[in-house]
Length: 584
Image (cartoon, rainbow, N blue to C red):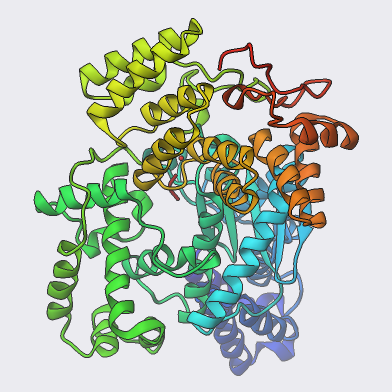
């Protein structure tokens, strides 16, 4: 039932009301207040909708369908899904795809067995199982971005704690949102802010993980901007603010732009194929391709970056406040920036063109690849990391000579001819530099086996310059730093890996040892608990595994950590044994 249908029903309340309620003024008041409930929901003001609804409840009988409809809408936005289903059924809402009744039913069924964790401002609902390891890191991230947005935008959500719901896969995300599964897969969407909550896909659904902590922050910023502006911010400014500010939970704004996305933007600028702001409506997730979506995100990132560089956080607040006051997007930008919008567009484009585009890079496909779409190219849950031998990793290498050298290096490494493998990888790396994570990581692993740690570290850091946040690269760097007992830097590397791939047991085993060495007892316990969840080990077995992890006699690159389902902790590999990302 739409807004006008509900109001038509409200106008016909006379037959269902006592005689004293059939006064024209009462009908007008009911109509007005129901309209205000609808407006408050459209404005993302759920507390306001609840207040107006309480006034209506005192005026009309409880069984009137329009009342039940809006009670169901509010119950749904408040996360009371059983109540929402009953009320919407009582309002005779049709149970069809896209209806509030279907959304309430599907969401109720998906989250009914979820576990629950809370912090001061958030409720985190997650599937039973390995997602338990996300909880402390997720709540820390959310509380940090909550503080940052209070500081930068001057807004904290009213009306209780914010719900964050983790879903298992794209199919479930489609059921709890208004996007189709095809749209989600096409654009690589993995999280949505809607219905007064954040909906986030578990990293386990993505082949190489994704930047799930930045994603939580990104979606929370959408919530803040929607509430603060009363849902008046157009999508290009919405996404620009969220993308630019998403890194504030971990430091300053503007850290989210990756070299690969910069290279893509540079290519589109050169080809004069940027996405117009108006084409981004109603959602960047609905653009035809993942490359279009990535281009649009980069464009709006630099639009907000330009505003921030010119006017600071006050400029961002001014844009949002102008929109809330009823200005158009162009007028709000003009007022905040003190220049005509046409001049702003020219200045923004000049700002983009001044960026140091890494033109030597081939922009990679930043589309999030779901595990179910990876066609067997990723390890299944419970499968051990082993020696991390794989030939398929080099399919991305476009330079044929480099790909041949890399394949030969992997063949030699598989046959335990490590020194010869390193020579072949060195040839491949010399041809392509830091362009490909696969070449850099396999080369670094052979150098680790040969105990050439300084060289391995140099290769890995070069790769991170091009592919920041890559989990495998950070894990390998963490091994080197932990081996050297450089605990603070090793901690940083492993936490960077965790921010994309939180289900790698090695990360948590290493953090157990690192936190212990740094005297961080509470954090060590957290890492130990996560290791137990992911491996099935007992706490005392985790202690033993952490104690023996990367001992002097262990082969650095052959370290093996048991995956879920292994019965006993394994010692690191013996020296004789030869030596492994996201959208929104």
